[in-house]
Structure formats: C-alpha cells, structure tokens
Amino acid sequence: MSSNTNARQSWKVPASIISKRTSNPIRAIVDHIKVKPNANKSMISLALGDPTLFGNFKIHETCTEAVSKQLHSYKSNGYPPSTGYLHARQAVADKFTLPAAPLVAQDVIITSGCSGAFCNEGDNILLPRPGFSLYQTLADSKGVEVRYYDLLPENNWEMDLKQLESLIDDRTATVVMNNPSNPCGSVFRKQHLLDFLAVCERNHLPVIADEIYCDLVFSGNEFFPLASLTTTVPVLAVGGLAKKYLVPGWRVGWIFIHDRNNIFNAEVREGLNSLSQLILGSNSLIQAALPDILHKTDPAFYDETRVQLEASAKLSTDILSKVPGLKVIVPQGAMYVMISIDIAQFKDIPNDIVFTEKLLGEESVMCLPGSVFQCPNFIRIVFTSPSEVLQEAYTRMAEFCARHHV
Ligand SMILES: Cc1ncc(COP(=O)(O)O)c(C=O)c1O
Image (cartoon, rainbow, N blue to C red; front, top):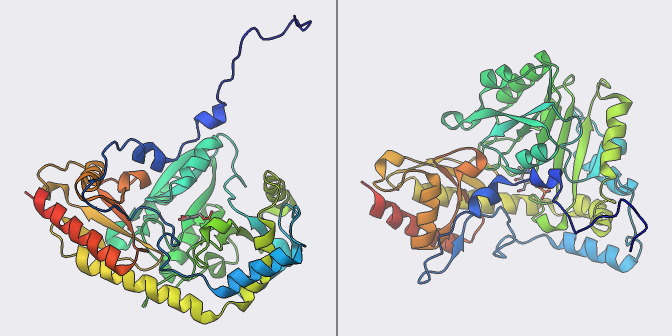
C-alpha cells in the first residue's frame, strides 16, 4: 500500500498533445492506401527521394575515406558541441562563403532542422504549396499556424508573390522558400529571387531558405544562393550532405546565419544555439570528416551526379510527355518531376489519390499523389532509379493511362 495519497489507482499513459498534433501528410495519405501491388509484376517505387536506393548513384571515395579516417582516429567518438565541432563549422564556412554572402564559423550551426528558430505558438509561417511536407509537420508540432503561398506550374513553379504578400500579417514570423524545389524540380531565376526579396524587405520578413538541392541544376539554369542577392533581408539558409553528396542517411546538415545588419541580434543567435541543444550534437564522425568531404572531393564528382540526374530528367520528360492525359512540368534541377493529370481525360480516375492507388494495384508502380504536397491532381516522380527501371515504369504507366483513357 502506497503512503502517497496522490498515488494513481490505475495505469494511465496518454500520448502527449505534441505527439498528437505531429503528423506527416505523406504518411497520413500513403498509409491509407490499402491497395496491394500487382503480384504478377515486380514492384517499382518512384516515391522515395533517396538517391542511394539502387546503387546507381555512387558516393565519392573521398567521403568514405574521410569517415574511415575519423573512425580509426578514435578522436571523434564523443559528444560534439551541440552547434558542431569548431573545425567542422569552419570547413563549412570556408566552403560556402561568398563575397556577396560572407560566412565565418560562428555563422554556421551543424545540425538538421531550424524551423523553431523564430516562431512562437500563435505565430504563422508561410510555406510553399506544393512543398516538402515536413515543413507542415514541424509547424503543426510546434503549434505554429501554416499559411500556404502558391507555386505556379504554368510559370515553372515560380512563387505567386502577390498572393504570398497578401498572407502576411503582424504575426507572420518567417517565410520558407525552397530552391531548387522538392517536389517541383524547379530552379528560380535570379530576377524572381530579387522580386521575392523585395516582398520580404517591404514586409520586414526574415527568410528560411531551404537550399538542400543547391547546385543540382540542369543545363540552362543557374542556382543563386538567396543570401547572395540581398544585403538587407536576414536569411537562415539550410543545407547539408544528404543530396549533393548522396548520403542522406549520414544525417549531417547545417544552418547558415546570414544577417549583415544584426537584425537577428544576440537573442536569436542564442535561441538557435539553445534549440541546437535539443539534440546532443549531430553525428560526430561525419561532422569530423566534413573538412575532407567538402574540400577534397574531386569537383568532377559534382558534375557527374548532375549529368546523371539531367539524363534521367530528360528520359522522364521525353517518355511521359507523350502519354495522353499527362502533362510534364519539365524539371530544371533536383531529382523530382511533377506531372499534372488531366482528370477529364480519364473515365474512372477522379483524382490523384485514385490514380496512385490504381497504378500501384495494376502496375506495381508507386509514386506519390500531389495531395501529400497540397497539390491535388498531380503526381510526383523521383527519377533517381536506373534508366532501365525508369523505362519499364513509364511503359507500364503509359499502358495504364491508355487503359483508363476516355
Ligand atoms: C526540400 C527538402 N528539405 C530538406 C530535406 C531533408 O534533408 P536532410 O536529409 O538533410 O534532413 C529534404 C529531403 O528530402 C528535402 O526534400
């Protein structure tokens, strides 16, 4: 018998409020797909933005050697500082500093994720639609209201800046922009970025620039780091090893604090440091290997990855743009293509979710419905599979569309 008069009489372990309001739209929609793949056809998934799945995108040996060197040094097995080892922050700053957007080690935080930096419960945050679904998950989890600004497919997915500006009020904490884009595969023109910065300037709105796909751009396009185009709008830029170095599982990313005029002041910088302490530092081995990874990787590696991605983008566009009922928005970078489904041209497919389900059930091809990115009647394809796999998947998709066409 407990002497504690407040003792509980039975087990009661409720899930926390935070856990209940945390949900990834991808899981919310995809987990409801009950259709099983066609057992007579091999499964092809074009759904996961992970370039390592098929082994056709090879990481550079400098990266493996750099990690192996750290492993055998026995010097990087402890807890790193929560903001990252100083030499790792220095290596990142040296790699990414630009005359127009200078960085020193103190402007770099080695981590992943920064969405809590300026927002309080009750504030709102502007997110792109379509956009990476984790932004919404993080905002919902923190009790921050999400307001979506539209990306326009007819303009290569540029931001609808008028609509974006109309969403801003005095509780708008920040705007997230993503360039090059997941899921759109778009790359913003310099003038468009300048126009966007003008809106932010007019409204005193700091920006979180998700540039994880930096430099993964195809011929005729150029990547401009947002911070290099402004001296006045404060920018937190987010990047990492995941995509450009083809190692998403290594879990090392970074935040750059670009704030030439001390608008963030000491409090926000301190806040970012505090938030970084929620996790006891990111992976010690990988961050210790950053100086070698960033500074010794043969530049040819970046070109090879880009060329390989561009060839896959072209193959996807060439085949799928000939399929009646589908319209390809030609990708300019990253590893994704969004395809518009003209629902009116299909006799028994009322929306993107049914399209995805039937395609899986009949052809064992999995792609994500645009609805998971807040963009109905589109599908997103990841084109990192080997070309023969892509060809097989697209042949099946073409047969599927022909079968269901009016
Ligand atoms: C737009 C975007 N931002 C961030 C990430 C996640 O990056 P990391 O693996 O470094 O957390 C992804 C991953 O797919 C992404 O598409």
